[in-house]
Image 1 (cartoon, rainbow, N blue to C red):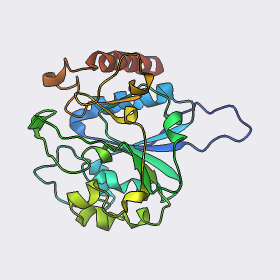
Image 2: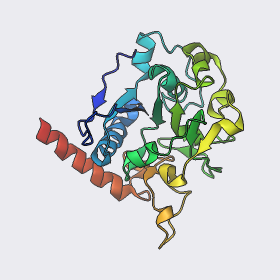
Image 3: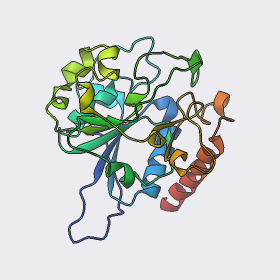
Image 4: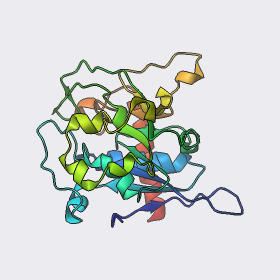
Length: 254
């Protein structure tokens, strides 16, 4: 359906029937191209299942007639609303994941994929998060609202009847509250996954000696090392190391 170039992960598990790639849609913003590249690399590097990774680029969605809403003053990225096109872009079939580009994956995405439960319309980390900062990233306004950061990493049951209602028309017309709070769903239709799969830098904490608190996916929600103001942020050295690895990997391919 989408003409967006897709990255196919060649690591297919040993089996008589090759697995269908797990579809992952990553929010893309031109200001954070390097963040997208590192996020993609970290996913592919550690995955034991085949992945199909697609950047959600607003400019391409507009060209395709799938996205036409005007950008609001409080939208900190180009994918603030286009993220909710994930079920549509996945042809309303199977499970697919949306994730912001400012993530660094430290765990095998298969572990998260194996948690899906068809009784839910979607699953996510259900943060209780109220940021203290008034700005984030490169000076964008920090907004506060219920279920904040729930929509930053979502496993969508794309074929669920309720998610079929996420049409381009709805995504382009509904309010931020309706979309980011998942108001098209009942509470019991939203499943939960461990917070370590959306570990918020500056909010979540690692407890020494407790593996259940060790991050599987680090979310630099306030800003990451690719922004000058956040180059020394917590876990920044891990991201910078991954960046160097990704550059060397790309050089080998070339």
